[in-house]
Image (cartoon, rainbow, N blue to C red; front, side):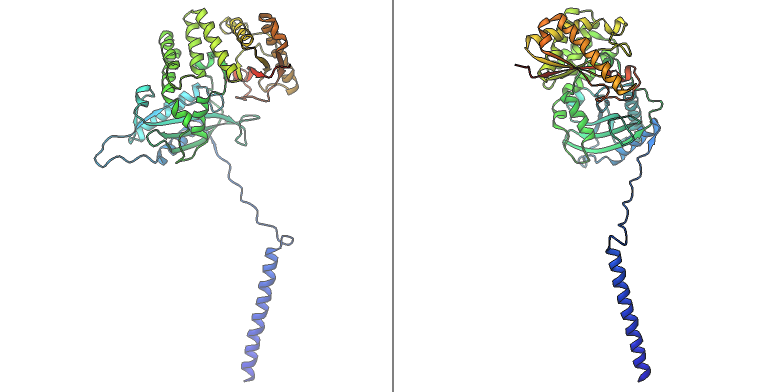
Length: 415
């Protein structure tokens, strides 16, 4: 009996010591003073790949994830895939790089994804409610933001099913900047004005602001037929077929949803290339009117680096007197007041950039006052330096010309 009692007593003591130990350890585990909270596992950085690899990664992800609509049991028709030309995710410009991406995607789709029938992006194909591929190619910093020093490109691809009105796939990747030719295509390089156009914003939001299953941006859908016509017009202009481009841009402006800055820019460019100077001046006036209606418009006056003098290249600067005259006349006719803001690329110290951008704005202000003296009391010059760069690569060539723009913003007039 004594041995059994000692045995039970020993078991009880071991049980009691175990309970005390567990309780003590539990208290320690919940005490923020004695044991630190587990650290959050850091998200691995997104790999930045060579350009060609990044394009293939994004495109393969896009096509393999595609949740395609199911056809009837007896149907042998494959879904139509069209590519609405890819653009820069901030400026809305097409470039040599975005064209290269599109070419690679078309080739990949034809070789590896026979479930699609790839057709051109046109008014006729859009009327069949196809699946539309949209994509953006945007310079970003190391945190993935579109500010500061750009160190990579973000590729975003999306498939938009016009029949269901839904996003059916997404593909993303990041590309190294080495070897990328971001030179804008000819139409975008020549376009005199830039603004945050609703049609371009609808395109960008369809790609960047969605996930699979989300609805396609309604503004993009409403204006896609006009966008298809604009795409054809841009191709004609880039190929030097100016009369065809003029006819197409004229048709765009008569199409629902065609009231877009790209169409007004195109009409001006086609008239100018055809030597129709009066018609070109009138078209540029229409650009200014649209900008004044929307309260803001950027014009690409290109200056000699480090100075307030326009570039000496006549092919670039010869239209500038017409632009300045139209800006002055239309601002005066509408009795508007303007803030004229100069911008620079990020090259050089920011204090110097701010002074230079202000001097350029003041130069433009004086030129407007020369055309219409009464504007001296209704215009204000400011310098933004490089704080509001859109491209931000600091190359100081045609690829980032938009960073050296002059912005005209409607402001309240002092009474």
